[in-house]
Length: 119
Image 1: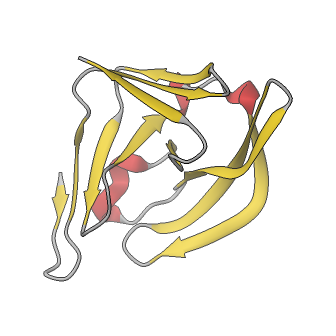
Image 2: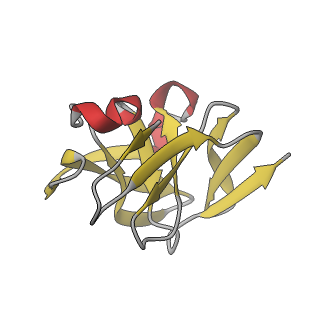
């Protein structure tokens, strides 16, 4: 799936294999259904279905942001092993039509987690 504007291209495609997210060495997501978003000049971002996440490691926060290309984002803090990563995870619960596939998916700031691709 691709949404194109001359100034801000966005592409979404399946990650093509198993992808895991580790926080403090603990797996918080394991998925064969991750998507990779390539957006303009930014590094690629993995988006994971919530159903593939261990949501017991996530705490909803009041933080929110807006992206003109994707919509309103909500945030989660990761909690594991006595450690916390505030607002380390974002999600689009009602994304713009051009990126509808990321609805109810989770994305992670890489400075807080390790993302491991297999395959």
